Length: 316
Image (cartoon, rainbow, N blue to C red):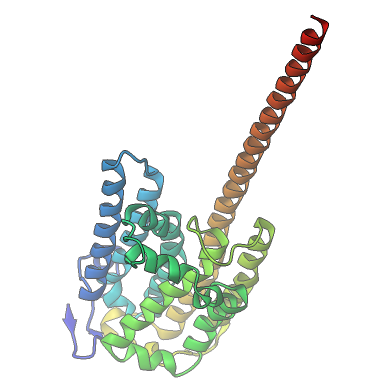
């Protein structure tokens, strides 16, 4: 495939799934994804060697999350995404909504806190710096719904309906920065809602559901706006290469349909994960209450036995 100097892909044949899945690696994302998988694997191996357990489900979720990024950024989908709005929208939705959910279910921060060694007294190692970062004011701000929900919405309307999108798409670093931004927005939006890792902002389960559904209608409206538009709205995709055999407006309508559908599917997945977490939390609380009741019962029985023994002694 031909790459022009600024990262645009020219004269591509008509899109098919086979062509979209051909290997075409973006070096930045390839290195970042492989590094992420290697670090996670190191953490799991370190725990296992120590005799600790780490849930297989978390490892699978994290690996799938990272592989979903590689699928979007290291295949022909990334080439077609430079010139086809519909393919770009698949990239955006997966990287901002599917990949973050899977990565968060993998609990990478919990793994890091358990696997990293503690520094000596009065010293700060990677584990201590990570804890400081987690408890920082900065983290409290960027994971608060007053920040995450507007950011989630602005990443759609403020990007696609302003010249900023065309500027970023005009260069390779700009395109990489935009995709990293989509991933980061997804992570900070979903982390307080359904992340397994400890975080500074963690409301009750009902509030988390409200946070989830607060952003989704705007997502759906964005998709509908693209579907209903009577003319192309994003400069980058106004003149698709003739070799693709597509028409800009119908491709934009398809992109809108993809954005609209993606506002529903991840919401359901997150809701299911939330309900499971809520149920598990209630079960843990019930077990703690039962244990406390058993301990109290044992103490009462011991006190009663002691009382009987004292009466017996007095009788003798």
